[in-house]
Length: 204
Image 1 (cartoon, rainbow, N blue to C red):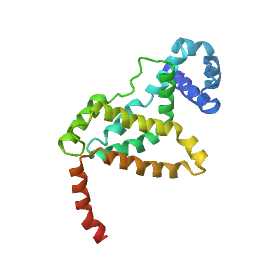
Image 2: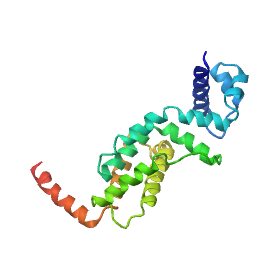
Image 3: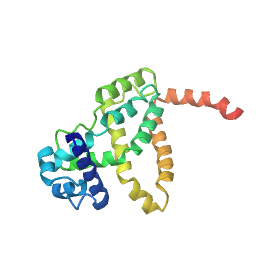
Image 4: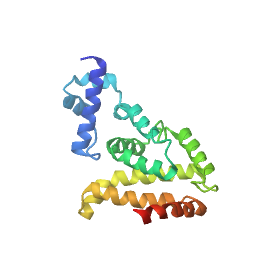
């Protein structure tokens, strides 16, 4: 195999072990090599540490994930963040991987890779009257990302405790998330939105 193919197998093996054994069981690089079916020396040669291996696995498909988030940039504030939650629901494994690196005190990890683009969109939301002018834009960004990641990290455990399918919980949490998003809009904007919706509601 080429180096790229071997690295890809090692990254996938690391994720498979985490899926199977969980976080607290640890991630032994020799076990990763065995899972991938490659020489143990290669895992140390290509990835000097567990952290480097996890970082590499996180970078896998990173461009696709970022583009999926970017593709909602033309949407209004509420619809854009509602879509963000749906996109991230499909990326739960990567969010768990990022959480591992954060807990491992990895200071090189970028938790908001689209920070500048997101800030510019939030500025535009304020200018369009969809977000209150006195909003702390960095605070809004961090709070919404935190809410999304927190829910998705605990999603399956919440669903088990409630005894409902995770997909049903996604819908219910999505409704609450949307109401919270609307709560960040100016009152005048919300009043205008209600007036616009009334004819549609009446006319079916």
